[in-house]
Length: 404
Image (tube, rainbow, N blue to C red; front, side, top):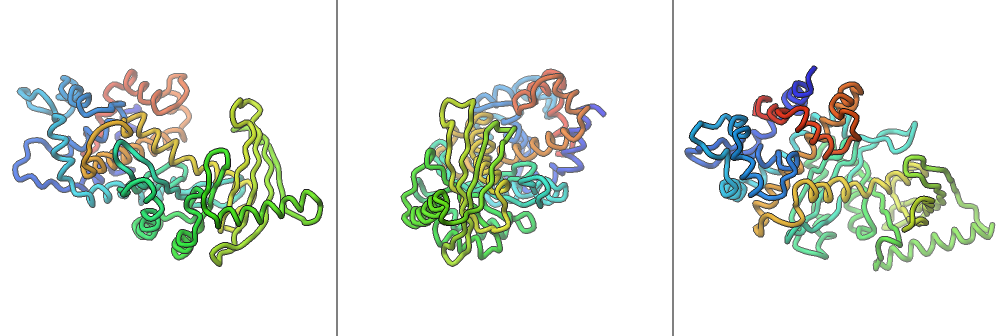
């Protein structure tokens, strides 16, 4: 089956893209341009690698785009950047939120929202939540970390220092909105080590894992320092053969590092926790060749390998959401001062990440199809889209032929 046909069938039958874009309501009385065409143009910006609306405007004036969107012969542009700006200004934020969550039932049914942290261990639903700044906008975002990383929430935050309060408000809302896809284990950094966060997460029958690396961040929380001091004292006693402590070590061939871990138990906010000290040595690194990471989790069923892998997955929201959005869509440097159009656009970009990541993951199950697409190139988002452009120049056309 041709690559274009596979992509068309995936978007139409599996992901049901048309139903996702039906979440948006058009408030215009006599629109000259279909709302779906406007939304799809923005949706495809990360695919094309456009980091400015003006660049998108230029692209939408080409004969290929005019033909693709079935525009009248006299039209000079599919949709202008000024029209996109106006539409993003009046789009209902609730429609954008609903569209971002629309693929979850399908992805959950496909088993893409769960992940096995270590061989022969049960699969888990993992979530990562963190704050960021994009342009002049502060936000808190949530990522479901499964076989496919799925950004599900991107909400405004008052500013730097308000991430903790915003997160505490969002956690119960996220649990309610996600339903069956809600994470069983939240992966957080040391900023979130406090009693309210512990109580909020545990009230939703979920667990949390806190990761802290002294070489990456400084912690001002006295409670966190006290908990670590007790663990350090116990591990020091173990070194003196006074107190037994569980430990394990191994070699990670994927990250090419040797590691060792120690574990003890404690209690925080009336919640039993396990405390791990992870030491990793990277022989090929010049910087941070030796790292120490503290891991605190309320999920007492996590073994050494699972806790270590979960701590590494904490970076998925930075590397696979924030940085990728900035690289492919320029979210860090431009767009709107008004938060309403900015967050409408940001959620469309997140939806694009979900759609194409899910497709590429399913495509990789078919080794022959994957090799045919990449033509011997190493798979990355950029190289995959480059191959689509050169070898399948009309591949993105299936988004429109899939029923949008």
